[in-house]
Image 1 (cartoon, rainbow, N blue to C red):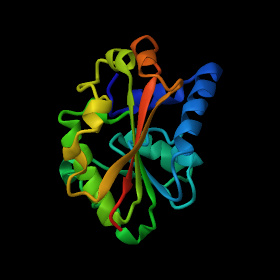
Image 2: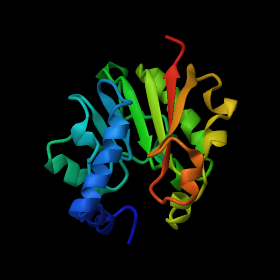
Image 3: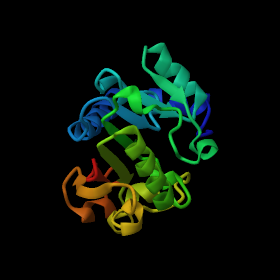
Length: 200
């Protein structure tokens, strides 16, 4: 199964009732931390995007997933961050975007801290005030062979990530159950970290 093709899109869509209910709980957790029109970076098949406020935008590298989102009437755009050096030039500061979420993406990257810093810089240019980063716990990270870099709270707390971006690390929590140790045993445990813009 390729990460960027129709097979992966079908895999994301082919969830049973129980998996859809569980997924709903995680999406609601993320939604509670997002405000206003939001950029869903790596929006997949639009599960979160279709719940976000009007004016929200999804960015996705998989063209099959973008096509699916558009078939639902969602504003999803093909975007390869490597081609753009992670600067989000596909978006405009006049779009009225307020939040940004990058969920279960960073662990798929090499040098994720460097790329997150570039995303924060781009978010500052766009006037975005809040950035939510979500990554899997230890067992979740080990469960997927497409994961390349383990990202934990120590990595996301690196001062170099926010230096010169105008953002600060404002909050962090684990879900479900706000205990880091759960992630050692439960595959679907995740870390949620919020960065907020301290410089207007």
